[in-house]
Length: 634
Image 1 (cartoon, rainbow, N blue to C red):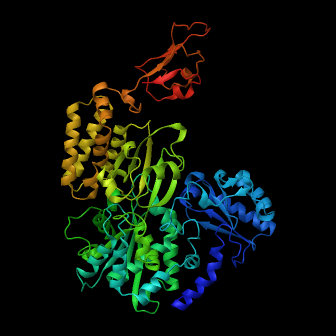
Image 2 (image 1 turned 60 degrees about the vertical axis):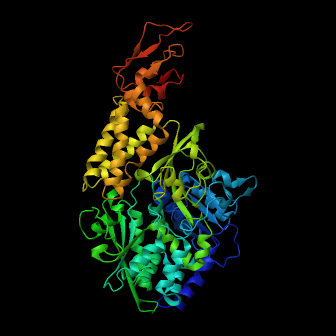
């Protein structure tokens, strides 16, 4: 595919294949009768999808289906909580939590007999005798996929399938129809802002890199795939499900700023993503999409991988570039900014995976198309990784401005077990907690900052009434203490002191003065730290102090944890009127802290038990064991 004509020929030949993967599309000219899509992302792989694929291949070989039904290993479908996931097209039958022992029946009754096996389908898609499209389920119907458009649709290890979904078409348009200035202006007009957390206008970053040192002998394009926030897996899923979109976007960025070399900095803990990136880069080079004289236009650009060792600080742009250079990943003072002196002291742009994943569609559909989605200052869509106390754990992409309530209650399915929503943490260790009073806030960059949180890269951790907000703040501070590179004193020492105060409070040893000192430290660290890690580390503490100060006061004054989480403030008690003396709690107690009393409840033949609070380790095993609900923690 050295020419646009060759690329077009491949696209036309593949369009009918990928078109079959549309619910109800029986008009496709695919050479197969059906496609069976099996999720090959990390989540479903860990829950057994490779065994599902192996069993399908075995059944196909035995029953003569190999030439009739194609098995496609895809990236993440998004609904991770239902994995392993398998979808059969053109019916669009969504099989969830698929077991190996179910495959034979699905093959016999559905793939051979033509009748989907309803008992194994995702229950929301079954409507009497009808099977609904996945797009009509609560999880998907309010989503709008741009960055995730190919995830769960194509085989990420096949460049031709990406091409069949308009892959590399944007690159061809850019190199043959647009000037670098045209490209930059299109990205500026689209309103695309960096999805890595800061929200800086992407087009402005590219414009600076092109113009600030116009005669530079070398420039670089970097991709931040070092996703380190607890609970975040957006970038990983894009790399696993659609790696070529990042390569295409980086090449477009290289043309726009005048760069010839790109680097993807990806954490080594993402083995599937790393493997698929290596495959994609090899395929792109062989097809002429990377390397010398791309499409015969005289433009040269190549991409290499650099593996990160899991340092959270390397998500900061200057620390990331320092690591690529082969040095210890520590941030550098700014200015100069990377657009002037970045990687190897040359002009450099750095965007994260999700930001790049939007670029080809903006080029193909126009800036107005992208700008029509979202809010006035936050255009387009945003990908969130839903986790924590929520029914539908997984990956979602919604227009900017969608309310938190819509994401959690409608798409996420709400809080399990009838519990009440308490808060949502966005932005990971750099973000803040959004309380129930802001449940209807439209999610965008400015709104979140206004209430003391931030967008971050897109992790969204949901908490219910059983979460202690002081403990949550302590958890995130513990993370940042461990991840601080130690270069600057405010972050290295300040976060440690903050964590010590929080630890003191959760153990019931804090004072009201400690709360004041904690708050003062937060503002000092924010204003004096060298990089974004230290500058944002106090956010979880400040947001919990702002909205849940009463919990801090309860820990300090009443020596109680209202949520019943902080062990040092808990006591376990047995209600003697409810206890039937079954001895199960005593048998399960690892500290031998439960023993018989002389008390015998009226009408009971067995003695009641009590807990020796000096021996109790507060593990909760007794509560989990007691079927009479006679034990409580206070």
